[in-house]
Image 1 (cartoon, helix red, strand yellow):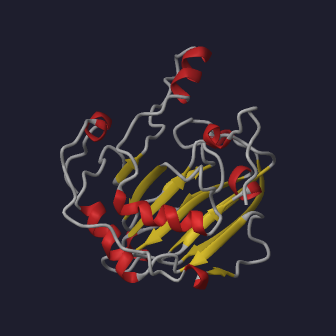
Image 2: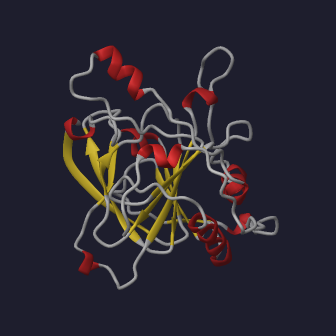
Length: 261
């Protein structure tokens, strides 16, 4: 792995263009998509759609992503579309400064055409409304020995939160919380969230879509555990695309939350 970049490196305007076209999905038989049976003890509100994209579509997405500029200032490579929370408040800042920082979204390139068919398919499956599709996407690449600490997605984002797994199968561990807790990775609050002690492991197959609603989204932390590199097959790699929508974008004119599926 080369020298790490900086946060600013990724969010600078880029002239780089993709040489790959978008995957055509107009003939995809969405009626044949099937929900995977999850364990009865899985977090309530969690569901999985198997084979959400085809093998050819997976290859097309990966070709597009690997032609882009990855963010390298973290322990794993990442990429953002739409925007993201990336600022960590300093320990000495005031409550007002902390609130401002935590609510700041850094702008990133808009959702690319190469991923539009995935968004459209999620809308077709009634995961999102036509007028409120996901406009934020964070891409994470996991190699052997890499992971992400337990957290809950920032409450600024609505639900569902959907994560597409590509290339390699992996397991996500869930920790039940005593109550809903807005503790994202960048907030610094995740480690202080009170847990019940209950935990569940959920296998994410390649090309499957993990969907988090309700309790699974707000009262369970999720993590990818950092296991030893030797525990993965040679050449193992997992690329995840997590799609989210701004909670405020799903509000009616009177400020009430629109009803989801």
